[in-house]
Image 1 (cartoon, rainbow, N blue to C red):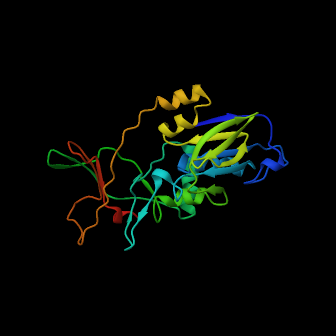
Image 2 (image 1 turned 30 degrees about the horizontal axis):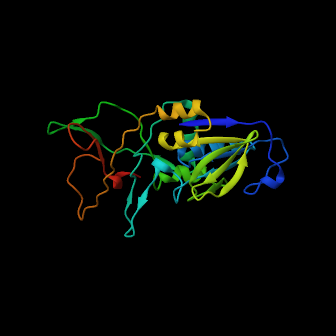
Image 3 (image 1 turned 30 degrees about the vertical axis):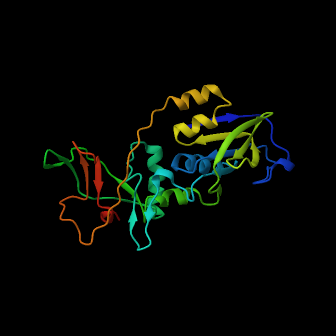
Amino acid sequence: MTKSVRGTELPTRRESRLTGAHGNGSPRVAVVGAGISGLICARTLADHGVTVTVFEKSRGVAGRMATRRTEDGLAFDHGAQYFTVSDESFGRHVRSWQEDGLVETWNGMIRVLREGRIDPCQTQMRRFVGTPGMTAVCKHLATEIDVHLRCEIASLQPVGNSWRLTDRTGRSLDTFNIVIVSAPSPQSARLLEPVPELAGLAGQVVMEPCWAVMAAFDTPLPAAFDGAFVQDSALSWVARNSSKP
């Protein structure tokens, strides 16, 4: 969920400790969350000359577009498995990412598993994956953006027409004219408490948890598919990560 709260006054140079305020009248923006929505927002603003700082509580960017790598060289897309394109404006971005070698089409054989049968998947769509992993797109978006990792924002405090960000240790980070919250709804609702209307909207979003199981096998499994939607099972989706380009 992404919401913004905007003031009208720029901070003084003395208040600008992390990035420094520019003298071009551009507001200073903080983005909380370095998943794909937060990073696309930050990238778009930065491309238009806006000073943007991104704060992310994890040790890396990408959120649910993450790729997990093990010490013995294995890799798992344990969040989003692929993405599709249904909007032309987004399609232009994807074509650009393809030209840069960041994404490729996944031509894996997709099936539906139900009642002991392996049925064809009736939904015909072009599936894209990041290369060499789903993280690639978000790492590209974060290029030349001021991203602070392992920095969990605990509260937003109004200061005049700006907002002061405080981390979980109580350390005051900086003040910004605009704060964009791009985090899961429970975290967003807590951060947006100074704005009850937005906090209420965030609190109405219901999230359903799921588990991602990452398994490696000594020999390839004799499965006649590369990905499958599973019905009537604790599993809802299975994929052969090594089938991705």
